Length: 224
Image 1 (cartoon, one colour):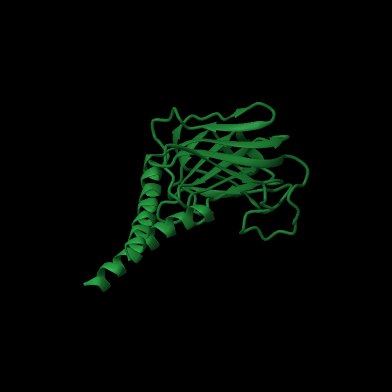
Image 2 (tube, one colour):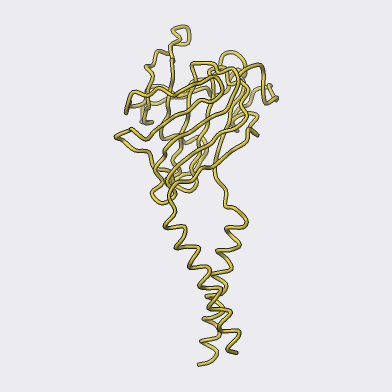
């Protein structure tokens, strides 16, 4: 009986250590390989991942896993095409992939499409509308326009990696556990979407701790 009780307490303690360790953690980076062929509401006929350039290989999203503050987004690719757009769903209350909360545009100026937008970070509001590719992956979402500008913003491009650094912003962006971040060039020839999922090992360890607590509670009640 004592051995079983000690085992249950040990498991519960391991679970509590995991929770406490998570609470003390700080910076975390989620990596996503390019497995996206198109955004899920695209109804066009182009069914290949890449149609010319750019060629995206992956995306890294770095944030504080305690506060959720977004630090940076880095996208590895060949042949960047501007204008392009980073789309951010902070995951608060919705978690739907295309329910965007923020977006970053770079060098958006195409009078033929009726789009003239300054570079910057924007918040989605009631006037925000989606724009669509008219070449490449025609009819695919390729950005947003008419949002509320929060700050001037220029991502850094070194020929291999496109980096969005959010650390100097006065208006911070905070991500919830079911955030969605996506990227698309104006032609939508290659896009990427990142959204986190629970890690099996993490969920197993957490579940073991909970199971230990539950087992200890059942033994205590039975003894009474």
